[in-house]
Length: 240
Image (tube, rainbow, N blue to C red; front, side, top):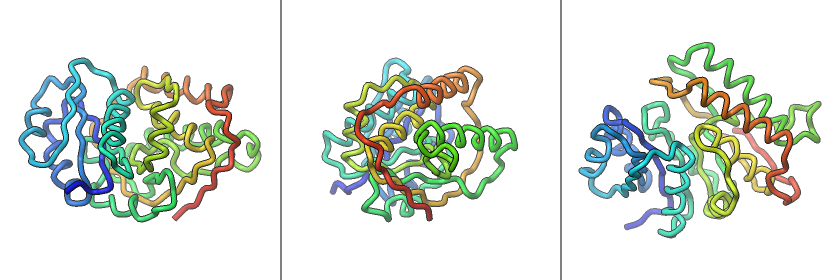
């Protein structure tokens, strides 16, 4: 029986953790793993788990392509909500109920309040990025911190169907981690309601490399230059 929420997990060479992540996630929601042309046993492991939807890419499309393909599947299959989650153990599947509790928000962000093993440089990078993105999202409130969101770079998120449809129709330019920044800009500037809930973030192997940081900075610069959408900004934000 199909449940109302689909968790989309983009995966590239995640054979070590993918089975644990998928099985724990299935307790709370349906799962779609997008195997982004892995060269290890990721796809085989996922395919051996009953009840999991598996999309296999023959070429690597990076985070943006994998998530958007998962979102298309969610819309086509009639899901009401779509959650994005890391394939490693950095996002705790048992915290999914927190993201699913608010039925009125179009986007619920898992805000990383508690950190486990996260290096200082990563926390500082997130803090600086969060400040810049907040200001870029709503420059009318620059003196007061812009959009005022606590964690704009978190990838643990719950989107409603209408938020997913907005992103699928948008001319997305991002390719990797910056997808989360661009997606947030579209949802925020479309006037949709955004909620944040506290989560625990466990740092594991990081895929954050200099080229990815550069792409993210480029997207942040676009946030400052472009409106992305013409819908008036009227989104409200609530924090837990």
